[in-house]
Length: 141
Length: 85
Image 1 (spheres, rainbow over the protein chains, first blue to last red):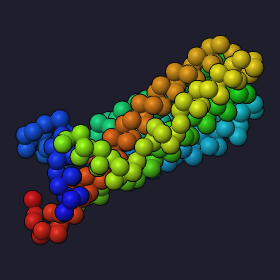
Image 2 (image 1 turned 30 degrees about the vertical axis):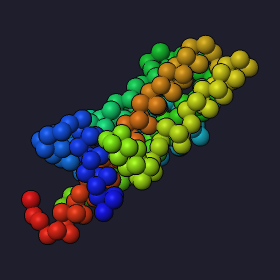
Image 3 (image 1 turned 90 degrees about the horizontal axis):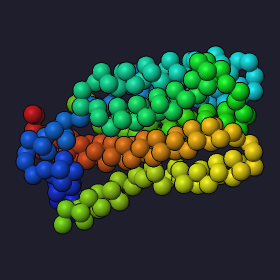
Image 4 (image 1 turned 90 degrees about the vertical axis):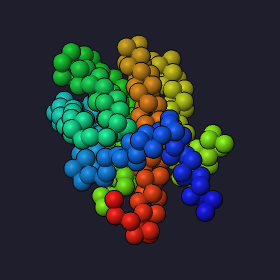
């Protein structure tokens, strides 16, 4: 009972509101989606595999793949209504991957091994956070 | 009252991606690597910018985790009450 009261007060305050309409908007969120989850997991996996190619000529191809999948994830998340938090996460992740893609495939700059492993590691860590939290979205009725 | 309720819900849900990810620790080790000459200046700057973006991702993840839990609990309450919206 205590938890229920906490929940009701928290839901009202989380929506920044005090009206039922705002509380409804907070409740009315994008539910768990298989495709979204699959794409997030794919980004995580590609980042993990990409790190293994640091220092080899194949890394450019890995970066291209990662860029493409992350863009697909962001676009997919944006196409769903009431999906604000996921759009924020995937947009920020895409900007992180953009730096990697620019360096390897656009500017073709000299890149250190430390940068490469750090960058892939950071992307994998963020993709893991995103995958975990997307996986815990409430299911459809 | 509202602040307490929020804190209790967050504690109850038990998610804190920002703390778990420990971006501050990553920033310290990046600085050490830059000082050691393992990273160029522009690589270092980019990676530090990435940490700010990572913090935003963690914050959004925390918000989503709390919202998901709250919505799931409301779903359960509605189901238990046998109410169809």
